[in-house]
Length: 566
Image 1: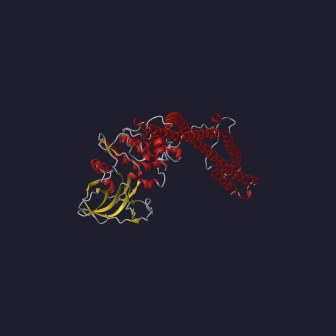
Image 2: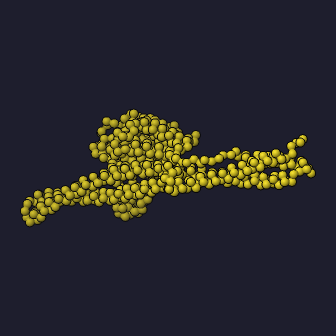
Image 3: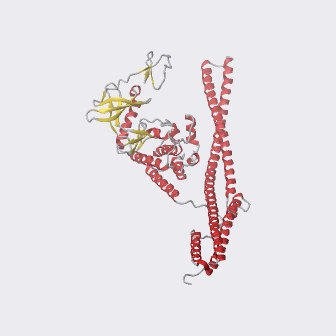
């Protein structure tokens, strides 16, 4: 906290000068450090500071336990509404009493009017710290979200809505045994279902990046609004980015009107099974989301199992490949032939002076043929490996391309719907701008009459105010028209890009087809496959022909060599 020595204004952050009078700011010593709150909590140091409250590390002097103390800003402590909302966090968390919800053990007010609550002290990091390092695996995301679902289900069962689920309000506690416990924090915006005392119709609560459409419109919300926010968190975990971005007004518009891009299209490594869960959570209509956090928990588990099963089993390709009519020979063919030849040579050499020298030349010739057979076998094996690699590569590439085409087609349909929505909104906004322009021009004409002395001063003031309101409506509508036209152009360009990509991918699919039935007899893929098959067949036919020659020669040699005892 920094303070201005002239006007005593207080500022958070690293500001050097007071924006009011330009004086150099000074660091303000925290008077709470060392103080005992509630007769038993000695403040040791400030852990975090925000615009509404600060969190301190403290020591419970009676039981000698470290705790965290959250103290509402003094200015807000004097506001009954903020004070009640702050204390509501303590009451809500105490009612929930769940291992995955921050435990609040005490709350109260000091003699000088500071409102505080006492929480368990956690060591670890917030989920916000984790997501800044990038996307995580489905398994890691599920490890975090399963406990979140359990904590939310407990709160919802008690009729408590959180209304501000986001990474900053999910803490990954590092336990002494090396494990991790996930905790939901900050029920400061929590609402008890049916309790409208602190809720005004049309008020919007929550963080714009994570707010549900019904929250953004200030409507009545249910537990499914919390599940929408969980969907945004899940999206961020799997992709490393938010589904929507921009100014607050732009974020609100996107949450209400625009469909998010599938996570697997944002990050190719994202399992497609996660798309289904995330996109259902981000449905605009609450009724189309999961009904409960418990149902979401089960869907997450099913998602993990299906993704794991897909990775374990070999992918079944839809590509039909013409089989190689190959001749297959035992791998030890050449060694066995060498053994047979060695036995014949030994028998020939044992004949001594009566050896048939022509037979010796034949033995040398066949030995050379056998060595050539070994080289031919290596060539055939290499050709078959290259063919199999080609087929597997084609299968994998084709599957990825076809999956990408399916996903892009879905994206194309969504983009077309978004374009239609923008066109509808643009037409309505243009009509609003036209009405405001007419109202302004009419009021301006009336003001011109007043300038000529026609009318009372009171009437002229009323008309002047009317003109001002009409001008503001016209200006705002014109700005909205400009923004919508810009968004429409962007979406139209995006649609063209998607169509271009689909066309490119379909061309590549046609080029990679590896049999005449799937790719056509003249397709490049079929030509490449034919070339590989020809190499395999040529090598194996050469091996077979050479083996036949060696076989005939070996039979002739074995008939001619002296037999033992003969």
